[in-house]
Image (tube, rainbow, N blue to C red; front, side, top):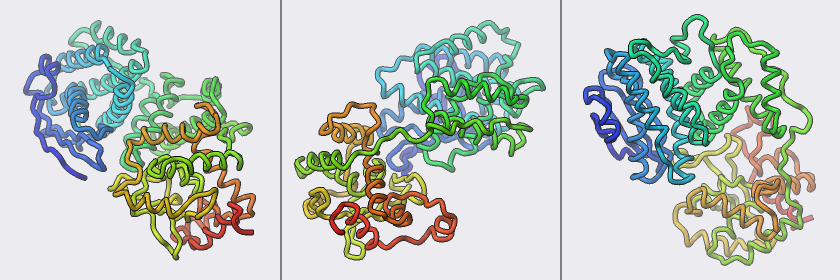
Length: 493
């Protein structure tokens, strides 16, 4: 973690915020820091016993981070977390200001839309955690609940649907200043008879999971839960029935592929199991909803002829073109695109006299992997499909630090385009860079490679508790992996 600023900011959120806010309500201690190049915002209300809230700003650009930070601080300030004596009138006016400001905010490009969508998701998780753990007044809890609703509506507005934001504004404007708005209060303050929605459950679930999973995993869970609660609506999960779950499945199935359907239903079960185990609900009728037929992956492996065409194309690219070597590594190792993108110069090394790529985790250095089985060393077979190990090592030697220096978006998209180009494939089909992984797995299977060796190359779990749990720290020798790859590539009998 590289701390870059420690700024106790009082009232210095934004001109728009200061125009509507009293200075004595801006008692927030604010930290901005950077981890693995990404900027983060941490906020703690002064004099308040609750834990601080941390939000990833999801950018490596300092000016962008500071702009996003100001907007987030304005959203946090609406709850007066440092002012237990704040009246409902104060809270309601602030909620209305933020809702109107969010509705009128413009976004110049898709990058801004995407960044704010993810940040709103992170903020919703932090607010759910605060609502569950903070020592707040009843009015503040009510304001938090409406604030969470505003954030959800702000995400809808980013996707072109302003209806929910408009409705919230109309509701707030239609309320008497002395009458609190009873809207989807958090679990800790739900009155008897108030529905416990899937949205509330999922936000509490995410609040508990945050910090235990990678950012990419958290983002995927947030996306799945968002899809589900839009389909479930305001159903009270305390009293849901099997018929409700069957009806939900019918909505999930509509217009989606089997693999996506099962992914969403699995996410539903995860949240429901968590809710039941934590005493939020007494029963769960979500089991047995998955579909069995047609749920296999639609990704199609590349044929041997297609792989030959790709490597012929790669071998004819300039020796200093990063796409040449990224394509080659995908073909020769079956590594995931994210694993290749994270490689450093030091990850190309000699083990047992064999050159390997060392796929490893280093979260402080910005490296993350799908799971522990992904950690592995994969040999590079010289001569496979015309690959020149000597020329590759010369390219590596000319680099320092990360081998692929473009931002991830500018690595993934061009690399997939470079794969499709020689094959004449269109974007959006069922063959992509990931298909190289399937192709190598197919070659290993055709060469009668034992499962434990193939899994050592591809980084898959064996599914065998003896190997995975008790033998998890052991590795198949690099020399054994090397011989298996040579056989799969047809270089030895």
